[in-house]
Image (cartoon, rainbow, N blue to C red):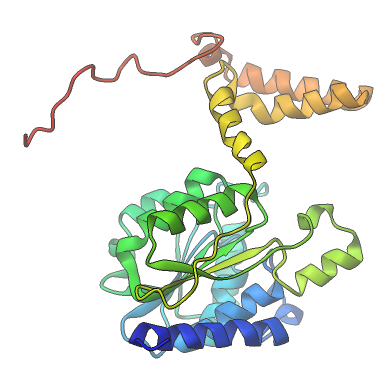
Length: 323
């Protein structure tokens, strides 16, 4: 690694290795700063923040703030680094409390360099310059929606705002959607390399207490770390994927065109109860599905049973007005 960018990459690799060995740089869990990220994920962000604090015009950005663990932990470790978090708290917030929790933690811990961008991630990324000004994103944590499109949109829309030596951290890499989107991003943007990845044996929700605790001290539900490597000093490396997982994306197309596409999660829960022979679960799932259908029945009744393309209002022929 001989070029200027590789000097930064060497620091990044050193930070990853230190994190693998030591976990948190500063652990504030006993002070009430907790969340859904592994200890090593927090530790790596803390170490990277100290590196990029000295980089002119650099900032930290994360998609998916939840209750502020990573945003506040990162900001506190590097008070001179502007830290931004994007979240509109549309998911993982059934009680509608997370925005207040984030605001309280920023205030209580004195993270004056942390700023919440209360917006849909896609809207915020399209106009990110309005929020971060002339700064460039040196550390970018992607931890928002984990469907394939959202992951890829997070990676592509941020490109024009990233620092030339940016490092990208992608959380929850256990999910096939996340691994495939990282893979496809690396194929489309070959100036990036996968520098490090780690996976747990299952989603934390499905692990026993001892094994879950071990992964909570590590990378929890998997991690990808990407760095810029325009000189190709690093070897090509892709996240592990399988052809079987590709079938899931074909299934998405087959499901999305059906009349009740939005009810797929409820329908699958009912199907699971039916094939498992659980009568109580079947009744509960059926009631949930019926209620979800009733909530949007008027829209569902306007659709075909299959091959809904929603194209009736689209133009049949159109030229670019500047042509």
